[in-house]
Image (cartoon, rainbow over all chains, first blue to last red; front, top):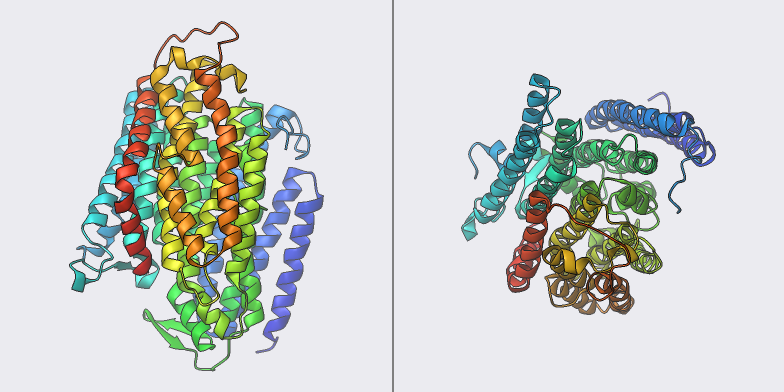
Amino acid sequence: MAVAAQYYLLLSAAIFCIGLFGVLTRRNALIFLMSVELMLNAANINFVAFSLQHGNLTGQVFALFGMAIAAAEVAVGIGIILVLYRNFSDVDVTKATTMRW
Amino acid sequence: MVDPTWLATAPALAFGAAALVLLLADSIDPDTTNTTVLGGIAVAGSLGSLAAAVYLLYGGVGIPTGEGGSGPAVLFGGQLVVDQMALFFMTIVASVTALVTLASMDYVREHAYQAEFYSLVLLSATGMSLLSAANSLATGFVAFELVSLPSYALVAFLKKNRGSVEAGLKYFLIGAVSSSVLAYGISLVYAATGVMRFDAVATAIQSGTVQTVVDGSIEAQASGASVQMSILGVGIVMIIGGLAFKMAAVPFHFWAPEAYEGAPAPISAFLSSASKAAGFVIAFRAFAVAFPIGALAETGGAVDWFVVFQVLAIATMFIGNFAAATQETVKRMLAYSSVGHAGYVLIGLAALTATGDGMALSMSAGMAHLLVYGFMNTGAFLFIALAEYWGVGRRFEDYNGLGKQAPVACAAMTVFLFSLAGLPIGGGFFSKFYLFQATLNVSAWSLAAALVINSALSLFYYSRVVKAMWIEEPTGERTIESYPTGLYTAIVAAAVITVLLIPGFGYVSEVAFRAVELL
């Protein structure tokens, strides 16, 4: 194999952490959604890379499922952000605080 | 064997079929608000699922043929396995869904999007049923998302209600992060072991070599690569994190009080009972089958996950119950108490020893508690739905004197609350006692102490509601104009079953114990 498996792990871990950082620091719900996509796709990198490494297709199949689920998740998420905008006139996730924590 | 084999998934298929029928009915007549028809289809689907689950459970699916059963139904090369444990949880899910859909008939009567409401509930229930039977990380993840996605939409269902939208947003954001953590954890387990089927993962851990599944049978990989225990360990911890979200366990519980408070009350009942049970069933199966603690300890111990669960269980019990004790509104109190109950059920995965002793007892105690909890907690939230229907306020004081105006519903609520606290007025006493036994069995004193202390504390805040309903005098004018049939039927049915679970508990715990043994 051209690239050793641990470099794929490093890449995916880096992307996962970038996504997690975005989730924890960004206030805009749409950027939040993008960060979650990064985290999901980090998992997909692992799946595809180790599918090649192990020589079976299980990981690639999971990556396909993962992409479909990510698309469904975004569809629901955009819907919720849309009603958020209608009710609070903003997509800032820290503005919606009618209930206390 | 059930013939054809796919019929063993009938409990999930019934939900899915009813959801599709609802969508069909909605496309024929998009403007209909005929609750009787739409709600009727949903209730019929749930009862069909319940009947199928109970029939298969009694029919011995999952019990070995040598003992008079018909063996587990294995589908899709072992991706789905319908056994006693799957059917036990399918029964819980179907019962809760039946109660919730019945109660919703009054709650959403005036609403314009009823068909969508019911079909989302049923699709989510389909996911829960499938999750009970999932025997691989792949099917588990897909079913997990099928549970989550409709429930995000359901929490935000009251589009013009700011509380509901805010709850939906928080639930969605935390849920999306958790499912990506879960997906990443699964990818690491796959990277380490090369397989996703639970039994194959266990083989990989036991043998220490990467496995592959060929034509449904597990084989060692030709290259003979060994399992990287450190990667596996990180993967297992991330899977625990992802699942802890669905169970509403600390530290992933932040969404729970918000989502349960803001959501329409029947949906709160649905999420806090059925969705929680679904989170636990996949955890039970994954950790009993795929990550056997004994083998993990022998092969160098990637992670002693039962210690992680012990910490989670104790933290969840204390934080849930102490937060519940300080609440001013009844619904939020119940939401936190539901977090606390997740802690009790976590004992099922925590009261073990390093060699895996005590698993059958503790896990079956957790399952039995989930069943009893399914009825008493659903009932309690449906009573809140009834109070919202009447326009009673949200605070404890607003419930003052309600016992005089609605004695039947308040008597049922009293049963639910005392049973939740663990008094022997409902099945809750026995399930907590069984959990207590499981902790003593493996000398897990800290878990036993946490269970007793928190049950005693919970009696304090549950009895505040009871005191308000029966002893206090009503403060303001309140007139109750109608007594909705659907809600009342659901609440009374839940109360009757909660009480019947006192004599029936021996049987339930036997079935649960057998189911864990057969895993």
